[in-house]
Length: 332
Image (cartoon, rainbow, N blue to C red; front, side, top):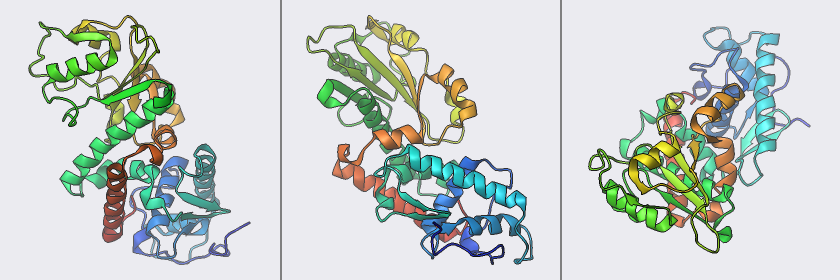
């Protein structure tokens, strides 16, 4: 059933400056169009956005006539957008996806500004981040590492099943020493693997993390060596594809830095706040390991597993980013 807020008929006026189409076109992918609609739903003065608003905005973008007829081209773009929105609704749990899709109308849920999903959506817009406070963006990227750690731990079974995890990325967190050697010694002691940083490790005095941002492992009750260990790398910029191979193979990383490599090579993983296109999925997986994109992180990193400080950080960043979009009047 269509929402009462939906546009009627094939003609509709422009939805205003906050809905101008900056750089998406008729042939944009469903993912790009769905991302656009989610942001429009958040900033709309009507409290949501309809299929008719998308098709009309596509039609009049760069056109002076606000009463042009909607064609099959725009309708096809709208279909792609709503197919993708429907897919997202089905993929995410109700508590993970912060939008309500009713027919051809999309609106944010009351708790949208608190959601991990929205945080990832906004953090994945590198161009937008360049216009925001640099310190706030830096903190958001560190918070993304925390979400990656939580998602990885949940994927392996959670703390109740013997899973432990670390954020190892530089700048280091409070729980780890700043110096690479000391931080790595701390990690080895916690994992019960690796023994320590090699005394003769090349460039250890200058190393930061060598691409290792998060680590998680699943312990046995006997605490002996030989266990599942996962190394993770995080990337938040639009150039994430160029970072797929930034972290060395896990065996090479361990041989380079550890005095006694784990008996079983760690598994590599890669974390990004965007939705990775299916056409890139195999390519990215074969280069970076197990993929955790916006879909997987939002489902696995649950609010109940986050601290009050982390939840405040998510809400504050979301509010700031949405306020910036409203102020600029250009969709993300």
